[in-house]
Length: 272
Length: 307
Picture 1 (tube, each protein chain N blue to C red):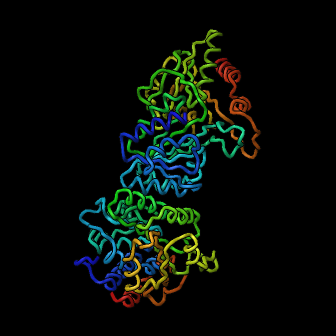
Picture 2: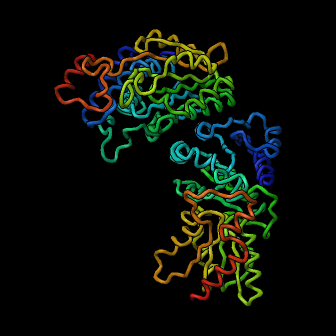
Picture 3: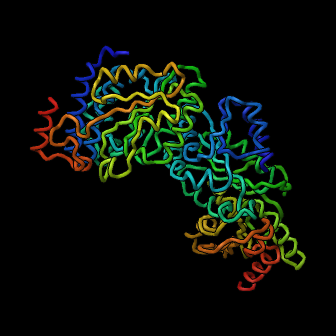
């Protein structure tokens, strides 16, 4: 489903990358690497997939998006602003005193379904929403974005066991698999391999794609609910810091915010 | 209590099609009538309390009223952060029901003793906490929380506890179980039956002792408690819970700012850090913890002698 008033996914992704870079720079905030890795996923979701109306954000029949990697707020808020849930100017208050735009995602912000930030919480909530939506028969789908490091949390695996048992085909998990977590690579800290096989063994419909390929993302996310009646997981292989050469695949950009000079270079590289 | 709970919940669910019940693979021989009557609104989530609590929040945020049910520490401490972040932070309409208050699962050992739960639940923001003493209070509290629209905690015992008093009019208000104004025992939960026995014993020794069940720990009706103890020379709190964070802490805290503070004697279960728990019935464990009727009587007499 294309929203006529929104740009193509690649242009949308370019805009939210630039917004997130400016926000993190101004607020001296962290988590830009994990924001940039998921930019293309959000771009496809919000321009092509989600049935949402910014004029009626609480519409009962809407699709739900649950950001479980709640630290990736700059790009989330930028996305909602670009969609018209609130004005772009409000992004200037990001992480400022008294702002609702907190560094971990807040449900005080229009368009945000749930506050997260302690990892491993989003998927169980999304499962509850998917159950309620199925019961209501409104055809709503629930999309939940996890980080790879977050998959260390046991609460996720409780949900991963539950959803296929209950044939929750209106549920789609997307894993932003950028291979770097907080204090090292995923392979070093707690290896997830063979990742797709684990989901398959639990009974999920698995799609494994390039998380920066907007055509592949649209195809995979647009196929929810899967005809098999199973919940879908889209393992999206991404690059942490994607789009900014000096941030790509660098652990330090989980934490750092760019200086004035580096911001200028980064904005130039993402095409702002 | 469990049976009264499920009967009351079923009644509420037949009137309100938005009420759901989730359990963490517990409730054998108790929850079946609800499951049979409302199959689309009952889910056995499995032995997975974190998922159960998060799911409950997700269902509630979709417009439902969700009860989650398990034993003692499992739907409370095991998923405490889910209750804090997913339920209370969002004001989600989730009711946490724990069966096995205090030593109700006596011989099962410390892992199954709920001794800190009421205090910890009371610390969560925006939750209401109910510790009923008898089936009457269970029924009233269940009906109230089913329609309150707020997060709630309901702490149940598990045996066929008798009714200790007359009809409950408002479950948020303390309930008089025995009149008497010289000493007032404030009790929470089924231990109130021992408070009544102790009051009877002290009555035989010439003391005028009243007993009130404080089944609603949060919000604590401080005004009603102040009124009930206005003439008392001693307030006694009695709980099947450690003193820290429970009824004693709440009552003592209510008086902390008063220049003239009535003496409050707290009777509860000692902290047991590092000690192994012996097997035994609820009654035996209560006695061993210093909560026999005779011990309660002795504690009250000692406190009165200090006056």
